[in-house]
Length: 249
Image (cartoon, rainbow, N blue to C red; front, side):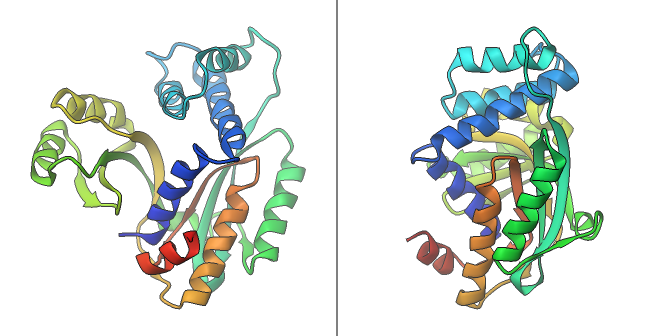
């Protein structure tokens, strides 16, 4: 299991519970707005919007807030125009970091990213330097209360590629364009996903076994994740559960 994957899951859970809730809401609303601008405001016809909508609803973003974001995206209401930007870099220990951001000011966001990397022992890299080490996949998480063999059978019948132990949940992967259909088929078989979204997954992992270095990596990932414009923070580190638990504590 990838330590980064567990870090990302923990951040999602904590973000919905603690003082960062407003920041989480803002990021999800921004995703809804951009998806509506790029593909239209019909949730049923726009797969990206459907995913953003479901993520926002899962995080308890109010329905009227989501509807206003869709209208800003389609131009029915005035709003800021965001663009997608990818940032690449390295964390301590040679760990590759790939950040997806939505920004209305590239200069500000670029400066914030450079500051987060440099202050936490990392370094920015040129476009393409680390992105080749990641691939986009459809990722679904299911409660551990489900029996593994039964869930795996339903997943494979639905067209999923794999099921893996992700610590606190079962992780099922599929092609990003197949996510909605696979999720619906699995849920029709009686299993409800806690999250389902396209995500960047590392194609190979870098073990980080030294506790001090691992915590430096995690501090950098947290610093980037705390930036308002950062939408997803991805790294190819494999950190032991014991270190993650110590860091969280």
